[in-house]
Image 1 (cartoon, rainbow, N blue to C red):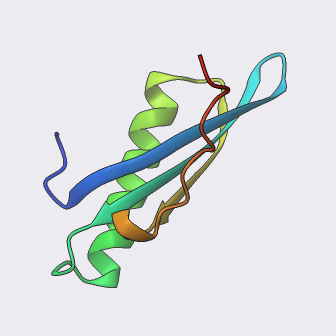
Image 2 (image 1 turned 135 degrees about the vertical axis):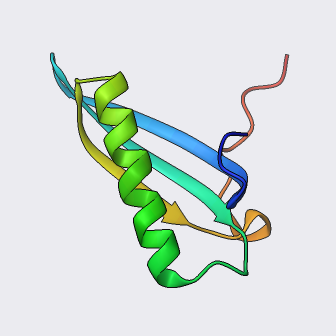
Length: 79
């Protein structure tokens, strides 16, 4: 909500790669009107803010991806 340049966060996935190390992958849908340079700057800003908020984040991968094309997690077992 704090980033109007991002219209949707499709998914966030994390992997603990060590006791004090987390890898995070984020798929987000960016507004079509922003330039590649603006997207790069925004991604760098978000990465800096996330690392400041959670020092255990060792690697952050933010993938621009249209919401309708985003891979979804498989459904869980029936209840």
